[in-house]
Amino acid sequence: MRLFVLRFNLGSVGVTICGGDGSGLINDNEKLMLDLKRLVSLLTSAVFLVGTIVILASHSATAAPVTFSWDPSKSLPPLGALGSSFTADTINTTNYLHSVNQASGSFIEEFILQVTGFELNGQVVVAPGLNSTYGLYFTINGTGQTVAGMTTFNNLNVSLMADPGKNNGTPSSTLTGVSFSNGTADDFALGSGTLVSASLALDSAGVRHAFFAERFMSASGQAAFFGNVAPLVDFFLTTPPANFIAVPQPDGTTVQMVNGGIGKVEFVPEPASLLLVGGGLAAAVLYGCGKAFVRDRRE
Ligand SMILES: [Ca+2]
Image 1 (tube, helix red, strand yellow):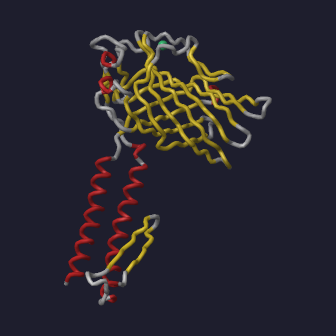
Image 2: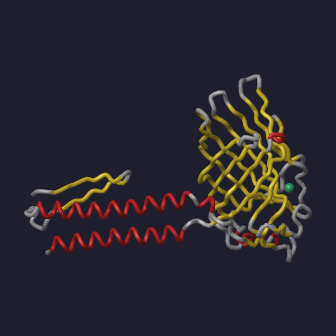
């Protein structure tokens, strides 16, 4: 029995094509090769299309924010009374960072982002009870390394935390870490996120800029607080020089601290419709070329 096997590498995508008729003999190799060339051409188009979709998807950070309606009366336990719901598209935060940087370039960092308010279409939104009957903050914990000026993160985990009664006190970053003056004993998580992408920049004025994109999910039992929660959340963190300090330690590490950085947090859509449309097109191309290939082989 003879078996015909070709392997094509289309970029990072490997495609294996096996052929053979019922007898186990291939008696029309030239025509088969012509057909395969056409098939590869079509597959290449499909792969190119998929590649284009991936590139577009990676630009989702620039997507318009999703408007959300949060209802603090529907968290578990409730943070606010009936009527405390509000609609917004932007979360404003004040940021606190503690980062231990090794001489090798590796680092461990933790943030508190205290939620100070909300906006909708650039206008301030009143969230009844925020920072009086309840507080909200994000924690961000990450590890990574900076080698030759290039920072990469191994992980960057986010939680949206609730502070019932707004009793945590004042957040701050010190040499020992970021914390609230009264602790966080009765706090609970509303949702959490994991790293999609991260980038850091230092502009000519010495202002530090961080962008984090995270995949976000509501915590168990907290879906009603969010209503419809968008799948991705973007963090835009800005640290003026006056809010940043780096203190070398006797053990050779450097502790970086931010007190009072400025944050903007937005939920954004996954480019799911784009992926579906693009995926559908790619599937159609693959299906079409597959059908044509089979039909031709039958002729
Ligand atoms: Ca608390």
